[in-house]
Image (tube, rainbow, N blue to C red; front, side):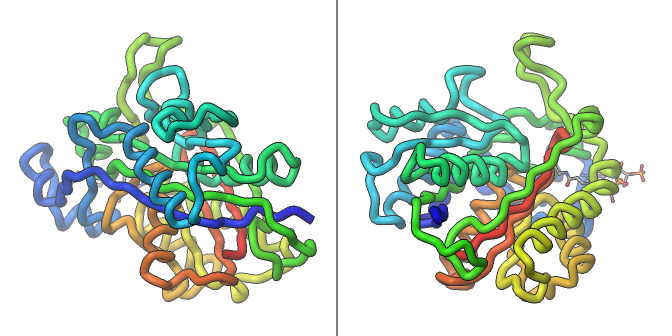
Length: 323
Ligand code: ACO
């Protein structure tokens, strides 16, 4: 059977690094509060000329280099983002043009923080369906541009960045020992829309709007939702938590990650945490964490890796893959 195997990975961050202490002059907050409640120590904030498309392009080029491929080799680009450069066209076609590609096709995917998990799942279906041989999946965000910088309950939590992977069709035997995507489970429940949303949009206010979040409510639902979907993935693959080599969760809050790992009985040595380094970068968070753990040699070929995310909507999901 066809399996979608990750061939290369790359990441990009804006130049400007903003530490927690730097935010103390903007809103009434403290490094101590932010670290204790979230685990975040710093984030990168996009400057002039840095956008979702430019960061996405940089991450895509790094992933292509890492895979030893060129844009000519790519059939499809999927960009997971909630902060596109324009309402339309998609940031994916912008990145396609920046890469000098005039072949293939490209589109954006909007599932907020779950975007990368949704996009990997979609790419896997295109590959297994035979419509694409190689897919560039990018998570790129500039959440700093939709933050209300007067609202301390949200502005301290998010950052900007991008991560990308190249997925390629490979041969598998239909076993969990295969390399590539093994299972993908997605969920959404729009009845939670008001708990995490942007209060603007082309069809409602004709403005971009600002991110609004009932943090405590999101927290309350997060752990149960993601552990449910992960348990579904385990049961579908016929594995247990003990089989997982690396858990790469959405990097929103260290307390949510710790509580999820504890509930699943995943030891902390197997959990990749980078939220301290870049804050919550929404759809870019999982590929940024992946790129870190691959770059420093923790994730190696053959390892069983569990990706998970949860975000606005609510949307959530889990992807199990062998590196
Ligand atoms: N600095 C200092 N104090 C603050 C700040 C801040 N930046 N923000 C809020 N506070 C205060 C509050 O006003 C409140 O004060 P009060 O007790 O006098 O009313 C106090 O801190 C506690 O506030 P809570 O909201 O109860 O704090 P909590 O422990 O719940 O932490 C947080 C807040 C970090 C937002 C937490 O609820 C959380 O992480 N929720 C999940 C959010 C999340 O992960 N969202 C992203 C997932 S989806 C996606 O990624 C898009």
